[in-house]
Length: 467
Image (cartoon, rainbow, N blue to C red; front, side, top):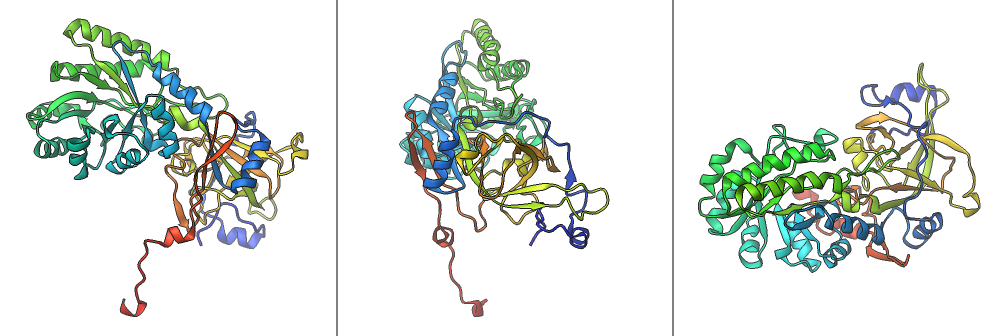
C-alpha cells in the first residue's frame, strides 16, 4: 500500500518510519484565512436528500446554470455570425448534450469516439466538429457519409484527409506561436505545445491541402481571460486566413475562457473579450471583402460551476500528537470520493470550493470552524483535495465548518473535467452516478453508479497454469 497523506496513527515510531520525504509531501501555506465557501445551487437539504436517494459520492448538475451560461455564450460579440461549439470533453453526458443541442449549440469533439457518443445522444454529425490528436480511420466515413467537419491538426492529418476524402471541405488547426493558460498543463499554444500545425509550416500546409477545400482556420491557445491576448491571437489567426485566401469562410478561436471557482476568482467577461475580436473581424472584411463567421468552443465556461459532488466524510485522522520535530501535524478528513471523481487537484493543483453540510439539519446553524486537510479514498499519497494552488503535492489546510465522520462535504465547481476525467476503476472504485437538478428543482438520474460486474465484464479468464 502506498503511503496516504492522512495517516490514522499518531505514534512517534510510525510517523518517523513511514512519513513521506519532505520533497514529496510538503506543508503549504494554509488557506484557512480565506473566507469560507458556500453552496452554489444546492441547499443543505438538497445535498442531504441527494445522499439519501442516490448515495455518495454523486455528481449533481444544475440545468438553470447550464442554460444561463449557454445563453451568455450565444451572445458572444460577433460581426457576421457566431457558432458556439460546446467542447464536449468537459462533460459529455448525453443529457447535457441534448440540453445544449435544444438551445442551438453545436459541438466540438476531440476523438471519433466523442463524435459517436454525441450522435448516440441525438446530435447529427453535421453539428459536430472534430479536432483530434489521433485521427482514426472512421473519421473519413464520418466526413464522407455524415457531414462531419474536421480540423486537420497535423500535416499527416491533412495528407490522410486528402488521400481518403479528396475535395472535402476541411479546417486547419494552426499553432499561432502564442499560448495562454493557468499552468503548463492547460496551455495548448506556443512552442512547447504539440497541438496544431506550427505557423512556420504554412507553405507545407498549402502544398498538402492542394486537393482539399480549406474553409476554416482553427486556433486554440489554452485557458485565459486577457482581452489583449485574445485580440493578438485573433490578429495572428486572421493573418493566416488572409494568406490562405478568400476560400476561408470561418475562423474558430477555440475556447479556454477562464472560470472563477473560488472566492475572489473572476470569470471571463465574454463581452469584454469578444468586443475587440469583433472589431478585428470588421477590419478584416474591409481589407479583404470577406465576412468571416466566428466559431468559439467554450467547455469549462459552460459547465464548471453547474456541477457539485456530494460526498461523505467516511473517516478522520490526526497527526498532531507524537509527530517528529518541526512537524505540527494536521486534522484530516477522509472522503468517500477522491481522485477517482475529482482528479484536477492531484493533476494540476486545481482549487475547488469545499463546503461542509451537517448530516443533521439541526446543526446547520453551528458556527464553529477548524482547519482541515481533505483527502480522498484512494490508497495514493497524491489523492489530495486541499493542495496549494498549482502545487498538487503541497498540503494547504482549509478552514471549514467543524465536522465529524458522517457529515457531508460538497465539492463545488466540478461540472468540467471531473466526471469526464474520472479514474474510476483505480482501487476498483465504481463510477459515481450523475444527477440533473431540473428547473423545477426536481432531481433526475442521468447516469447510474457503475457496478463491479461492469468493471470486470471485459476481463477474459485464463487458466493460471497455462501462463
